[in-house]
Length: 487
Image (tube, rainbow, N blue to C red):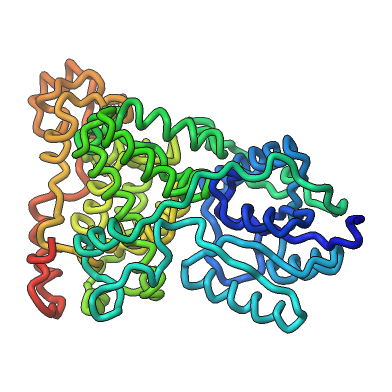
């Protein structure tokens, strides 16, 4: 039977840039038809465009996926434009009657995909969708009344009971020949930054192989002390899996089962494995919340917090983005973000608290900056975490989350290794004074060659004053219930 007698199926890649453990790919292969793999750089919908750091990652990940497909005899077709229009063009060129896809659960993407599926169905083309991104699809983890959970702990308990990891699969070893089709050159998309190339400090290996290596490295090393390492930024204690999970280079089931297996067979303490799977659960919780509450990117989860009296402080925001606030732990984090496209978990909380509580700047401005500069920028996680810090989100405790940037630095970077790496102008300052340089005696500053206001800026705000201001602002918000009991 010739290719013309057997119309191919289309495999539409989005944020599932892998061949292993890929439900859409497995079902497409089971159809017994040639497969046309395609990635569409969608520029015609209302879906939020990826940030600059994410586009850097996408560029490398698509190149890796294309190479993996080529090794198995397939060509990744690249198209740019409106997703439905490009799918229709592919259907016309190939005669395909079925499109296989892993679902996206963010509200705008969900609505777009539903519109595309409805439009293609009228032309007798079927879209078959699968869950390739979450441990459980939204709707699979509901409370006793059939609604979405709004508190994390019971959500996690139910999630643990519902997870049924599918068998590990490697995808087809070889693809049947598919029609030759026109494809964009990824170089023409301009995803990698130029003039200047500010990504030179990005120390990452995007792609499925990079994701598998990151998981293996984490399980064999940092997992053993994960609960400590994730709080101490000078340690190599995090998993560094978040961008691989976001782009679907590794499935969440594979990460979950690998870590649980390590805890079960003694390669890591079970408590550490449980801590990491709880963090995967928080990622899941965020995705489920966004799916059920589509206004989260723009509106407070707790509506009364939309009345928060935010300040217009462009100078303060600019100082924050540039790592020039005068608080070393904050500045170290913001400089790490700009240089590497990533920031340590504990420091993310500190810098976010500084923006929304010390500067009283709207969390949406911070979320937007993270969206553009993080290689692991994920809409659900980004929005949920910023609202959590701001006090307007699920499980939020606004009065408890006014982090003192001095004591946070002293507690989690006691010897100052993290600060000295990212704020080198303070590298000669003794640790005793490092977290609040303006309190150091003049002779200590002179010996360290630190001139406040010249070599290193003075604090742009007094934390004690800012804390009182934030508490006063919170008191102006009409509150329903005792939020302080949520934590």
